[in-house]
Image (cartoon, rainbow, N blue to C red; front, top):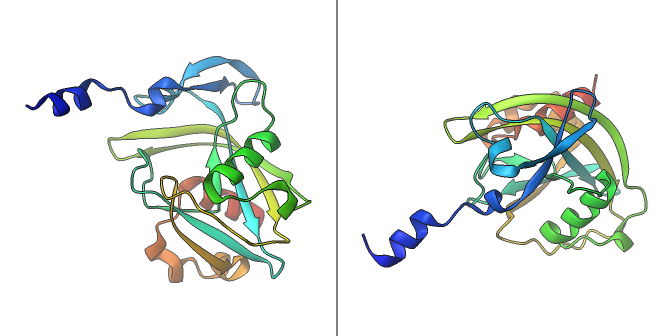
Length: 189
């Protein structure tokens, strides 16, 4: 094994350097937990969000997660998802991720809002899991200029949201993230 390989083997995953907010089933904070711990083994329920980004024609921007993502790599999300940090609201966390992942700034929209919240638990093969109380936020872009970060976003696709919901089999090849599928299903119930 080379020195570079030995260094790689001992270097902790970037998620091991971050914390997430552990929550109960009602989304009450229960303290901070290591992000990697929250996503491995049996997992730890934690706070998360997903944001659905629309244009003025009611099309949804699907974003393909980058191949370097530890969980659900190359799956399609609608549009960004992450975890707020301690002291951060869901809206603040979403604004931050929209800018970091897609270059979307607050001057491009005026209607960022929380529309739903649900709990789910899903495993991703032997790589880990998500066990989250997930807030759903929506926003409509008045300016659709995008500057995606390739470390976060591998591809982008504007789709008719109702068409995607009405004909999920037609989009099966996209391999949608489970939290997005749940959020979309609940949105149309």
